[in-house]
Length: 295
Image (cartoon, rainbow, N blue to C red; front, side, top):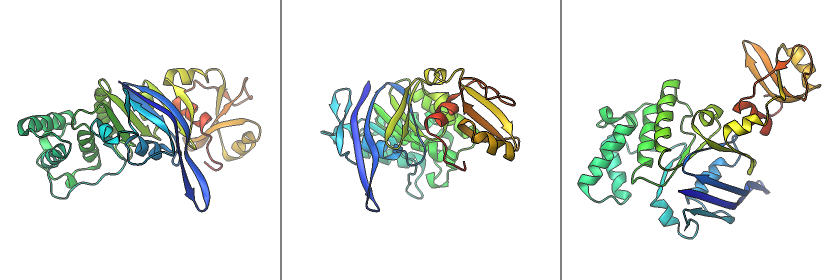
């Protein structure tokens, strides 16, 4: 299974100006979990909506194993599972009732097969014990797991999940990670997020999208290796930070123990109090998508 995307372009007009939400995106995504990292406003939602055939691009091509998605969007929808960032549910309907209804909309007509399929999905997302509860009474984490179940109805070949762990506590995030990892063993799963840790933990391949452009693509380990030997860090107070910001190439500024952790890029040590930093995916992200002044 392979998803091929070529020259995907989408432009909006906002306040009289053209906004390039997607600016010629090219990607080839094999089976497994693929992470799409980017800040808010990078074009991730436009990209996801276009892949899900909720909107058409200005130009470009999308193929899923030979299927021309833009020429036959209905065929793609039959093979698609989509978990948007925000989704609503019908009030008062239990998980099993709502999944059964959605399965019928998906074209699963046989009652016995539909009941078995719904039961399998509820078990997969660990909601079997809560199947008779109204979904609108679920916690945030339970609702996200239900969202994964509805996205897997019909055993899709392509699954798109948009910011699935935003707002979840650590236990629910770990539970959802395990579910996504299991799904990724047998289908193409695109995980769109701004949470670097989710991509680092889950995805063997990834890309960074910023201002409509793919800035980097590859495996997390390979991308991290590019920065080996070139990063330095120091814990500073506010006055020291102001001084070093003018003298170094800043990668990121984070808080640590009430002080500023400054990470910079340089061929050799900037001097005391800097020490060499072993790079991680967060460094790759910040070096590729610089922080705005004041962050």
